[in-house]
Length: 226
Image 1: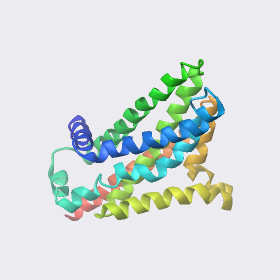
Image 2 (image 1 turned 90 degrees about the horizontal axis):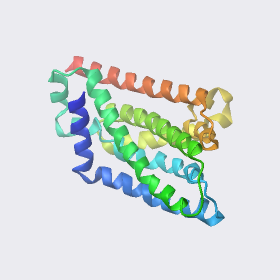
Image 3 (image 1 turned 30 degrees about the vertical axis):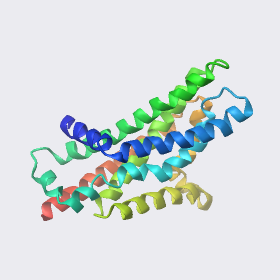
Image 4 (image 1 turned 60 degrees about the vertical axis):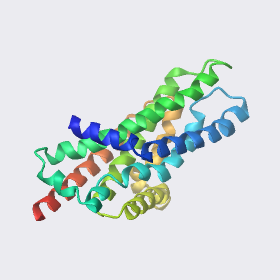
């Protein structure tokens, strides 16, 4: 699995994909940092994450739409199926590599925290709980984006499916409370208050594991057909 992780991380940073994702996210962070923090004379670093999580809906697919769709399009998918590595290690390797890009992005946001330290002392516990929630949300998004990429060879279609699903989950709770666990972005709202929301963490983990398993099933069936 480690070899897969290294290969995928290199592919993100030897191509523009990783830099585009991080650049877009930090650009939007700068906007919301000004609007939600500086504009109010606040030192609450976590405030900008209320807005930036919305941006994830539209930029996570930049990372995930290529994960398997590109392999199929360029004809390297067969190499995955015939490699000695298990399907579990392949899927988890790609998942953790993409998560690593998110972790780097989070580390980059600490630049804004450094700015706030010139004006006061932000509450560290709240900040780290917020970053944990952001990571959990991102991992859930990655797992679905990876699943979407596994069911098509067209990266654009994979991206559209991913964005469409995320947008739908925003509004599902308005129709029925039964859909509340699917509203990933709404569950994040507890984290910037500094509370470790156990129920939300369990839901994120369950969602993430479920779509990782579904991705493995899709790829295993395709492998058996080939």
